[in-house]
Image (cartoon, rainbow, N blue to C red; front, side, top):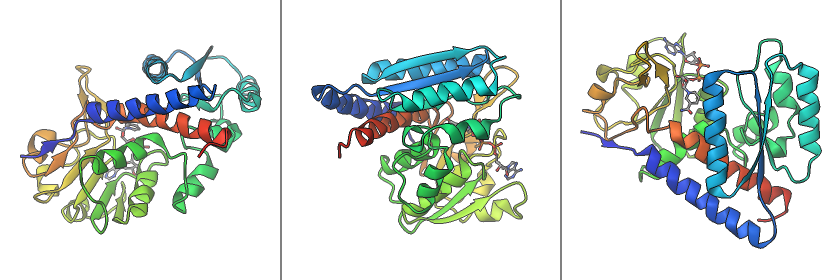
Length: 284
Ligand code: NAD
């Protein structure tokens, strides 16, 4: 039976570390500050934004909140980003995705200064990630690595299989595993024999978006499983991309859904705010 990786506990540790760092910065009269921009009234996004603001409060990070109506134009949003880019007191800018259809998401993400890109989505930061030099790493992928490492699992030399190749999870998590000296294989919707590839994994990351996609017969004994999936069923219950009940019988470590990767995203965001603030104030 697998050891369950407690994402809530690990994310709390990381938020405590961010809080300590924010307290150190306050001794120098510096208060880290995150601007959160929400366009429209998507209920899930509203919950995420609320949780981000709560985490900021806990860590001692000032949060600026911009809640714009769904009919905000692209030009208006870009003007707000320019203003936040120029604001020396604002260290991080987060635009909650998805944006309404009339706004070009890419254009918006490109407009955020890379040093304020606490989501780690700007191509400049993605480029740094690919050469192993990123300081602002995409939050969910960086959270996966923390879960593995803080569980005492060494990634070096391990066969790491990532299922999913999205820009926000699959690709960056693959690059981070490579930076940690893992041997990485990425599977996607066109991959042949996914089961065979997954069975070779010492560390398996599932980021597919299909409930219970990873079954017991697709993993080997002792595998470490990180389930990024968040799938909401008709009953509103959350299910991961892994058949937890059965896969956990073979795994050595496994993350649950909820309570695994989910809480890590915000904790890593807090960490990125501190990193951004320190860099902007030339603090090592
Ligand atoms: P996405 O839809 O952008 O990408 C899914 C990937 O899975 C694609 O690369 C696709 O090629 C692959 N895929 C689809 N069907 C497949 C199949 N049959 N076989 C193999 N591969 C297949 O999704 P995403 O944004 O990467 O998110 C993945 C999951 O992670 C979703 O459930 C999402 O809700 C969740 N997620 C969680 C967090 C978090 O904070 N925990 C953050 C982001 C995403």
